[in-house]
Amino acid sequence: MTSHSPGLLWGLIVAIGLGTWLTRLSFLALLARVERVPPAAARVLRLIPAAVLAALILPALTHATGEFDLGTDRLAAGAVAALVAWHTKSVLATIAVGMAVLWALQAIG
Amino acid sequence: MATSARREAFLSGVRAIAPILLGVFPFGVIAGVAAIEAGIGPLQAIAISPIVFAGASQLAAIDLIARDAAPLVIVLTALVINARFAMYSASLAPSLRDLPLRTKAPAAYLLTDQAFAVSVLHFDRHPADLATTAAYYFGSAIPLWVTWQVSSVVGVVIGSGVPAEWSLDFAIPLVFMALLFPAVKDRGTRVAALVAGIAAVVLIGLPLNLGLLAAAALGITAGVVSEVRT
Image (tube, rainbow over all chains, first blue to last red; front, side, top):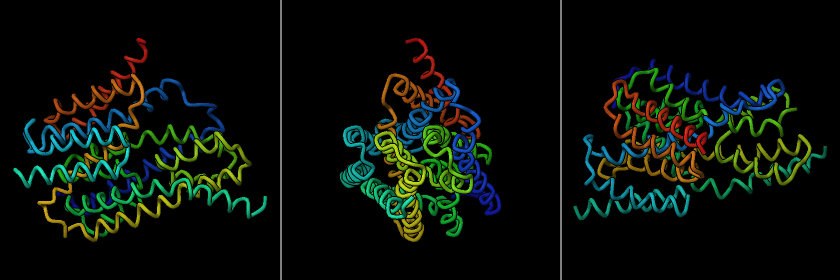
């Protein structure tokens, strides 16, 4: 549960929303002037989703209890879900299998 | 430009995005539930989706808000996740360049991974005049917007009613997983993902929840180095 005040949360939401919209608008609005994305920027931008998503996922599995622990139900369920995600690339199938395996393990556990 | 041709293009866009909406819906529900579980009020939890309209960044920001992370870190993390939109913006720009700014502004607001993927493929295969191209883009982008808003409101409404034993928060890393694999497509992205993932585990204790940003920076650097050396 957050202890950030509602006022601060409004500020955060609006700042993220405005920054995101300006990012989306960037080259759509500018490309009449800038002929193409600088290659160095393109190289970095291309790698961002892979890096950020991996950095979001792995700690959620290795630190499921708050401490480093490789024996949790969540890590096991996450490993199975990763195989499903890899094969199907489907959000629905990944959530369904991952949650089902977690619930099964918790029921046995 | 006949209205019927524009309408036809809009509907083609709708048809192309339709199967994808099925996967967006549970993602939106989870975003709504997660906001409530983080202790965000219902009004703000609902407002996040139309104001930000970017699922992965919403979930990451909500996660950081729940942990009382520093405000600047929350905003930076969300904007780094959304930096990929600059890339999409650049890819679509040649097709939509001649639109007036008053049309570009909402077009940009509606830009998502899915609308981009569907549109860029279509523009490549079916070059057309500006009005038809724009109609197709909005046809693919608007249904996703509607789906996202409806599904996240559903999530906010059921939010506090979900028992903790259901471990629904586990759906967040699962959603990210389904997004990760399509993003890993060659050596550079593989190295970036591997290094960032491991770094995030090692750096989890970093103050101000800076671990994610630091890990992403390390992963991207490693990815660039691996590409330059080959």
